[in-house]
Length: 221
Image (tube, rainbow, N blue to C red; front, side, top):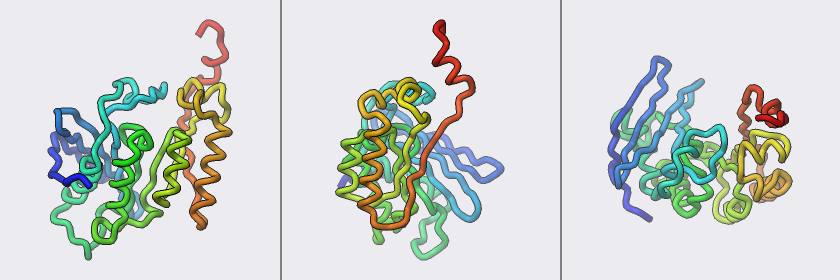
């Protein structure tokens, strides 16, 4: 396991509704973002897993930056550390300032498999941050082989970055669909859920883009 070092926070913004956003500089000078969103008695931290992303989803600004490198487990868990410490010293027996963590920031988590899994284990370890498996969610665009591998090492909650209900449109919006089409992704999701042996559900993420179907079907577009 990588050593956990104190991250360097370049920017911290706190909005009127309590949302907190950080720009964190990593080794080598690159930066990632983490966001804490409070809502109805809970606070969900959105963390990044890569610097940039190689999947190039058409609606995602991170993908347009290209891919730099994977984040280490220490860099990933460091975002949790930053969020918790922004409220003052960490008290394991006190009120939780971070109740949920979602891997929905920069990068595709399953393309950084080992480091993401190590970070998840720390988040859920009773001797570390002690988060429930129901309160840590990994979001993936659909890297099917890695999704099958994931169920062998963890029972973290799952979200699917779907964004289209058919392969024609999803090929355009989420190019990895050309390699792992929807039917293969759904089958992998079913295998993952079968391995959990509980009543959890998979979160489906769907971005509504005005005119997307029109632009797809118009010859001159």
